[in-house]
Length: 547
Image 1 (cartoon, helix red, strand yellow):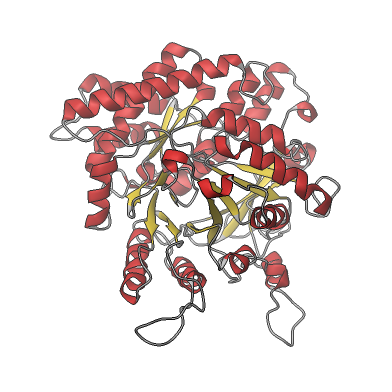
Image 2 (cartoon, rainbow, N blue to C red; image 1 turned 60 degrees about the vertical axis):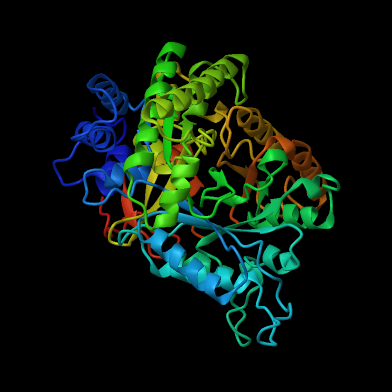
C-alpha cells in the first residue's frame, strides 16, 4: 500500500517503522501474527489473513502501541492505564507513585482519580499534623511524567480527576490558570507568557489533563456554583473537563489519559483499535471488519505484557475492549451529509455495537475466558488518522488546512503545513468549495451541534468518547462571560447522555498542536518540515527536520 500523503508516510517512518526497509504491508502482517498467531495461534489462518488484509486496506487500525511494539522484545501494546489513589496513607502515596512510573515506562499514559484523598488542612490523628490534600500529589506525578520520556521520545500523557464536591475543588479549578501565575514576585511575566515562547517551559500540571467527576448527586441541582465555575474555566482555558458517571456507571470514575476508557477498578488498562468508517463502503464489509477487530483485541488481552501483577488480575477480570471508530466525518462528507448522526449512520452504528457485543461473548466463551465488561470506546486517533489520511475519531475536520506540531525521536519539536487529505480528496474529486466544508473551526460558534452529535454516538458506545469541542477565543462575542449561562444549561441538558466532555477555546494554551491556516498558505508551503524554536518558526530556516 502507498500512503495517500507524504505526511502519512513521514509519520509511519518516524513513529512506527522498524528500520528503513519496513513497509505498511510488513507491519500489517507483523501485528496480526504477533497478537493472534505464533506457535499456538489464537485465530485460524483464514481469520489472520483476513485481518492482515483489513490492516493493509486500513479498514482497521490497532492502537499506536500495538503498531510500535509488535515485533519487539516486549509486547507493551496497551495505550494507557487507569489508576486510583485508594486511600490517604503514606504507603499508598508511595505505591501510587511506583504504579504510575511503572506504567509510564512501558510507553503507556496514565489516568488517576484522587477523590478519596482528604482535603488540604484536614487533621491527621497519628502525627498531629494536617493533610496536604490531593493537589501536591498531582504535582509530583506531573513531574514524574515530565522526566519519564516514553521510549526516549514520547511525551507522557497523564489525566487527573477529582469529585465535584471535594473541598479542594476551588484550588483544583484554577490550578492551570497559568496567565495568573507570575514567575516570581519581581517579575511581571507569567507561566502563560513563557509557554507561548517555549512550550517545554515547566508549569503546574502542564503534563496533565484535568477533569471534575460528576455523579448522581449532581443531577439533583446541576446548575450549581461549582458546575458554573467549571464551565467558565473550560470556556476560558479548556480545563478542567467534565467526567459524567451516573446510574450503573456511577463508580466508573477512572479514565485513561484521553478519557475514552472508563473503569471503577484501580490498575485497569486500555486496549484500543479503530474501525475506519471512511474506507468501508457497505454494511456487510463493516460487519466483517468489526467481527475480526473484536477478536484481535480479545487476543491482545491474552498476550500483551503488563507492568505489574495487579494489572494482569484486573485485566483478566474486566477484559475491556476499546473498539472505536474513526473517519466518521469523512463517511458523512463522502455521502453528502451534514455533520450529524443521520438515519443511515444510525444503521452503521448499530452494526458496530451489535456485532462487537456478539463476537465478544461467543469468542471469549470459545476460549474459556471471562467476557468483557465493555467493548467499545472511541479514542481521538490523532497519529492513526494521519496514517490513514482521515478524520480522527468522531471529530469533524479540524480545518481544511492547518499547521501541525509534533515531537521527533530526537526530542525536537517540528511542524508541517498540511492540507487535510480528506478535504483535498473531496475538493479534487467532487469540486467542493473548501470554504463550504464544515470544520471544527467553522463549528466553533455552534457548540450544541457538536455536543448533540457526541451524545447521539454515545448511545452506541458502552465506555466513553474522547472528543474536544473547539470554541472561539475567550473574550470574543461567542465565548464570553455573557455566554457562560447558556453554555452551562446546554451541557447540563445533554450530560445524562454523555460520559465526558472537553472544550478547547482557540489560543488557550501556547504550543497547541494544530493551528488552522489559510488554504492558499498551506498549499504554497505544503511538505515543508521545520524544526521549531519556541512556538513560531520561519519557513526559511532548515532545522533538524529539514525540507
